[in-house]
Image 1: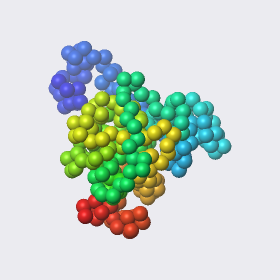
Image 2: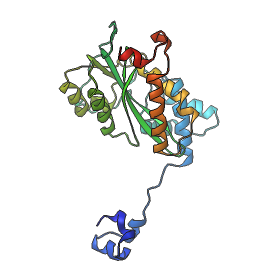
Image 3: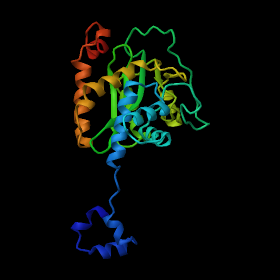
Image 4: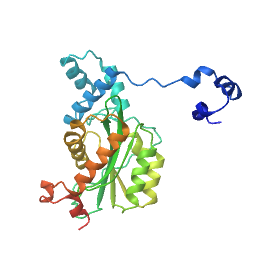
Length: 269
């Protein structure tokens, strides 16, 4: 019997627990969510990092303390790890990776990107909710700024990233696919998926804040124009609003860098 249906069963709770060899108290267990303080600190770290992506945990800790938040660097580092963010300055802890994971060179230096599906980028960012948070993965075309695909999830497991990539590949495929050197993008599952499509794999160099600049600009746009203006109460509300914003961004928002055309008009031209 599925325990989520126990209230509709003729069997008593005690009998169900006995049959399934479970402690009765476990039937009433509800996971403890993050504290309001932790949520507020994460949200503020996200704001700081979005504005200053070159700030590391040391500077963020100092700034939070200046703002009256009594917090040490170790706790800030833990929050940043949980948020999936890291500073874009050189250092031994720039990206924690399995030693078996392969790092690819940055292929975009000096490359003239002058047609759609020449270069794509993928990245992950933190999306705040009232009492928790989610993670947004997106694939963007460098030439047109068109968001090819995106996925939202409440965890940083690799699955939603692979889903975003597979959805993008169902539309087209690039010559070069760029990412940072984070753990998700050096895993065999991700690398094998890209290799199966015979695309060239590119990864940002350490300490290069501008290597993935197109998607970094998109993160700032979606946060300043959408996320920071809203107060999502639930994952469903976040998903609906982010979907609507990305549709607006792709099809209705003119870009100065595109001679005030929309990404979709350039991508599908």
